[in-house]
Length: 583
Ligand code: OXD
Ligand code: MN
Image (cartoon, rainbow, N blue to C red; front, side):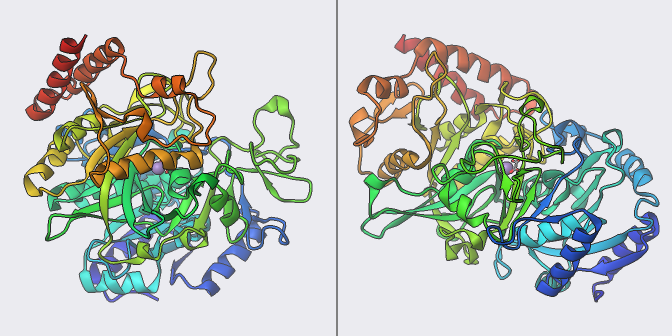
């Protein structure tokens, strides 16, 4: 297979000239191709089969121990003007960046196969879908991209018809952390990634294309590319509302996307549309609609069990690639909080010893097709996407942020999103558990200056009078002894119900300076071990602490200088004034 599209053929030829592979393989995405690659990877020790009786067609990949997470400090947005990348991104001048990374690519594929992966982000027949081609020297990347995107012949056909595609070049190089860069050239619709095989750095359709490059394109074209799950909530009357939620990495998006209603909620059903990325467009009626550009899940494994996420637990019992988990004596994958079995070999491939830390890496991952999930909604294939009733922001915060509140209007909602803060997690290399601002959960993923991004978000208020309402949730409030106040997981449906009731105009709320909060009686806590005092704590606004928070949000916004939209600063000042008046 080659291509009739000369720009694609010329690019592939020029990459081959630079990287000097032994051979070139154009991926067709077929089962036969996958079978061949998997058996080659097993022979080479890149994959190993897991217990075939309990985990049919599941494989384990152990990565280099220095290559287990995204590397924000080595990730660059290379726009011609530094200000276009903004203070939220590391920047390099595009010509310098090309020179630096091309020097690493020179000859890097000698002795290796160069794979050409045509892929489509979004349903193959959707007007909202976008195309890309990833060139890589990693068969592991090919196998993962096949699960995570619509990859192969159909995508190539659409690329040839449209002529436009994102060019992604990837090599695992020698995995030397000092020779590792993830570079984005949004003005050229190009990505170059060298020296890492980890998902977010190497599966270029995901964070690099569907968030960083797509957010840049979305601004120019009038839509939004967001770090959001998409979920459908069906009530016992058979009515379904769709909600999109932005939480930072490893803060429970996959769990919420696959939530199983608790026993108290018979007749309710939750449908998964996506667990990580949403592309949001206004339709001709002004309704915001969402598609999930991905076709699979690249989820955090530890913590997944029958109670926390039964759908995920079940779906990863077949056709799954596990990366950096431990194994049991009978070769089943094992991870912390699996609640079944004992680890024998840890994620480094050594005999398990509790003294050496967790058995599975805290950022170990599963890669699996979305259709493996019992709650998968066939509307994830709908070219027109699903109508969104509510947008929900959230973070992992021990204190301050109530269980749920609603923004006063769209503009205030943009401030709520811009002010999101969360404790850092193992999804990125670096310190874990430090609270940092993570606006719209996009800090690592916005492909341009946040100031311009917030202006873009604000501009939607002028384009539609049917925008979804905006909310903020926090499942992670703790008491002084570190105990979580809210049970979380399936019980979060109770909070989502309040959100939908608000959207449908079915419940009142208390107006406070930070937004609308539920009356405690409007969140159904029947059958839960959550006292009235705890609900009060979860639904109260500490005016003094919020004043400090709003000052800190103000300082953060000011760090964006002159490009910061005045309307956003005005929102922050209004909330601060209201907090001062109220105390
Ligand atoms: C992810 C992440 O892998 O956000 O989804 O890091
Ligand atoms: Mn993510």
